Length: 429
Ligand code: GLA
Image (cartoon, rainbow, N blue to C red):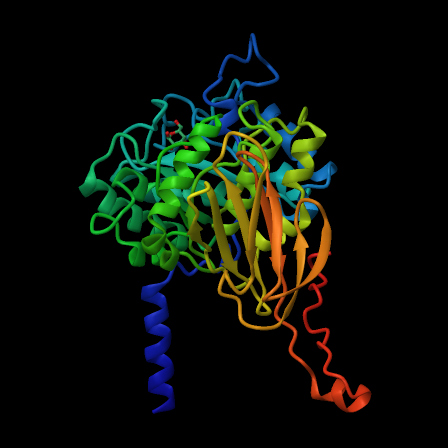
């Protein structure tokens, strides 16, 4: 009987999961697309063109400027890396002029530094930029090529394909990657090509075959674009939240912090809301020239540890006030949580008044850490607080578990005192 159960259980596991054990927390790293697009003009723009030098430069920055230690370990190539033709054996090949060492050289470079390399493909006849795609009959050979090169992640886009091809191709690539025996993180753009919502999109199935997926349109370097994405993801949160969990993440697209479109407040807002969403944190910026302001937002340890919380529960918008303040919350390990107060106002800092009990917290006293000002206070659920939220900015909190009155303390001191079980976990400080 016991044996039968075991066999049954493991058979179930084999058929129902992308069995690569990867990305139990949202993946973090750098991705070329938003900032560097399809710049292949290395003669005139050698620093910024899609070439092995660009990825080497970013790898150097990630490993030398404190990013890697914080979890930013993926260096991901996007579109326009390949030659326009496959080789004689039908395999994809990197453009020999821009990638003279081929992809294996880059893989080696990353692995030598404790980083990982991601690559880009497309489940159709061409990539969005017009490079060779991966039609159904090329899935196996491409999975094998990527595995042979030692690649760690694949983003599979969906240009130049249709519903039927996508329905067959995305699961087939999942199987083909697993069959290589190499653990390759799998990012599927499939839902973004089908409107991102059920019944056209089946999130239960996606969670079984992909580690992450783009649900929605491309981010651009503007606050408008961030807002559009935020509106869509939180507008559809009831559908999206259950889809996410360890090993399977909704992907609202890259972080544009450090580029040209966001103010410091807006950059904090993107970082905070991406952390609440348990979103993959792929920066698309120039790490060689990034400002210290943008860097300190992207390297904020508390924001990162909220994003990386082991429970992997995607947070939600819990309040939309008439004043234009919105409140977001994400449950975290150790009975803690994160709150984000976000202002949609365009006038001046707004003084928002509330209390933890108004935000549905249970009775008790809480330690509250302000993520971007690096300050802490103890707050009783019933105490009213007022906080100042900048226009298009956020205040982000880590809220500890409530401390309960302890009998032990009572016998020792004759007074009820809160136990210090609301101390901040070591990982965060
Ligand atoms: C699509 C994707 C982008 C990027 C480009 C490349 O638009 O959504 O993220 O990969 O293709 O051409």
